[in-house]
Length: 237
Image (cartoon, rainbow, N blue to C red; front, side, top):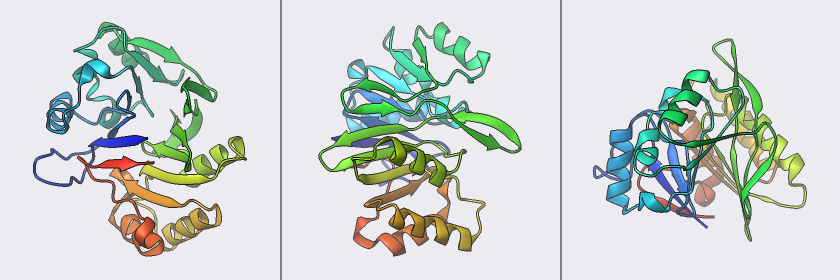
């Protein structure tokens, strides 16, 4: 299954616009987050040849501007698109989705949105001392499960371990997205990366808010199994 990285702070070339936030497209039909800007997301999708009319649903990881800012790039072109969110998202965001004629679907539990594509539902986290709800996207293929995170405010290890407990018969093929380690100490990042190995995560792709030290540490530990998650690339999982 293909995962196209639509938006990230680092890009594969100057053809693509980078910035704060994250967005990817799974199987050509499911958008995970929308980055910081509809303008930037639209430009990158156009460059990648994405047909927005084929997008069936948007999964929002959490209620922060750098993940919801590009909603209109999709909802503004197609009415009735399902938008999967956590019940704890703000009324402001929920109202915005409805104004854009999105079909808001809220769930706080593991939910299969399409065959072998799941959302975790609400996983509680904390951001700057304030509770925040977040969810991840899970893709199951013959290689195992791939976990895609927006910012991992509940803790990247916590999220991975929760998913692993749910999918006990599946190996974790990849974990990619925002790991939120940019303010984490070097030693703690090393411990997290080593724990990934203990959990037998085959491939790792820290992006967005993960920070350069985390990217360097994971790249050194994972070698050829490191996923360089850049805006504009296509990953096969």
